[in-house]
Length: 117
Image 1 (tube, rainbow, N blue to C red):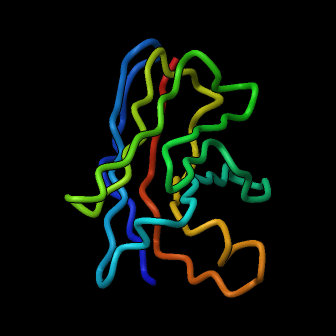
Image 2 (image 1 turned 60 degrees about the vertical axis):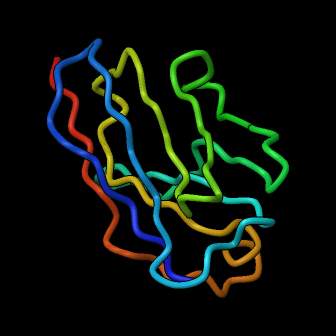
């Protein structure tokens, strides 16, 4: 499965962005999908995830600001990011959690989110 993130951009602190994650082929409608981000000089980290049944999880730093959702009919997972902060600046990726955990994940080029202060 190849997932591609899009929707990034340059925004000011406090503003919002919505990222989309779409599948190029079949969509893993029953699998957990997560958003990850990698800031310059740092390791890639998970940000938010959503199971096939719609249960969501978030890293503490984005709780209350980010919302992950999925539309299996549209084969898309979304990340609504509100009240963005400069520390949210990173390249954002999406991937199937199982693929990541088993080391079989293929990472696309991600989408750049830059938040200016």
